Length: 517
Image (cartoon, rainbow, N blue to C red; front, side, top):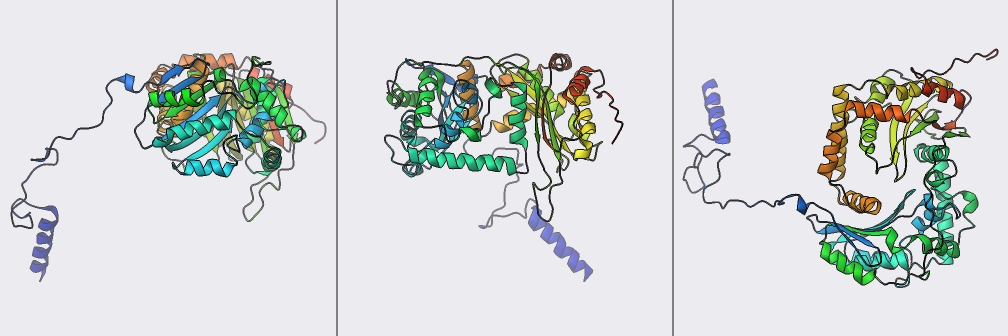
């Protein structure tokens, strides 16, 4: 019995794995014994798609007679992403009511001279499998469409309509006012305070100027903004010389032809003429503190509520994305890393960054410690956001100030290489996405008139030395800090004490003594 079982297993093994002489075609002939590394006989040699030289990767840029720049990046595929980026954002609202950019973002892709409603626009896009979106930041407004490349003419025509001929009817403005009110309420109620803290840290760092102006419409301005206000602003900032038509996944000549057809010599709805007031202010870093006392005990109720936390963000001025020091600052930000106290971990999750190793791993009561780097064409801001129980605020601030001072200390070769590798990895993985390539092309061409390719950026990252990181950190620490604080601030140290800690060698807060507790 045992012998028959053994023979049966041996035969099944021969059938599964194949032995010359036993592997046969259905017709009865034996399979030839050929290793997988050898080409198959009788099969033509495959021809793989390849790019000859770097010139095929390059972003093509053409400037039209009216100053509009047309930029394209070829990419294989059926779909394309095309959009118009405008050098306009909340930083340009110095002489206007704050909140205009927020309104324009909400009003995007509404009715125009050609399209009676938003639904008509969406139906037109659906014929080409398209979707649309508008985003505004502190310095850029972006209208974008992703659709089948065969519908390029329709897409560019629609973008021109949306940007240059919006109706901005009273009904649409009224609906936008309601939407903004709801968004502001949501902003103050959501458990994640990061957008609110980002607003506060910018307001503290650049008090009353450029990127320190509010990105969200202040509630007192909602009723004041009307069609006339919006047209006045667009007349000054929605001009061809401040725009880039960017496309990814299409031929440059096709995009250029559409640009000339729909964006050259076109009269906008607010009438042409030379802009009257263009704000060319350069950002002035002031430093300072913005505090919001708030009861955070009931932010997230339910069976597993989020505990009451106090949130602190400390920032220092870094540099513009046009400066050479931008890359060392990006490496420094990646080296600091951080995140929440709970993480799935694993390779590439940043568990070896300084804010994990030195902060979250050592202080169990810290719920969050994350580094952020905001960069603009004339300034930048490197911040650390931390959150903990209100009773631990003083200790939390001292831990963060200590991490800032350690940035100017020695940088290990292993952690530097890990940060550089992680930065390159993040860059390349993000650029796998067509919409991300589109935004990268548009923003770089808008700011500099050209685009640095990924391999160039990787070379710049590779060239960063430990001395570069130490140099930019030392320079950064000479500035006054910007501080944003949200929650129960009873234990928050004085601003002067935080500044003194950042100026000291060890980052410790001055000791304070109380007669009564």
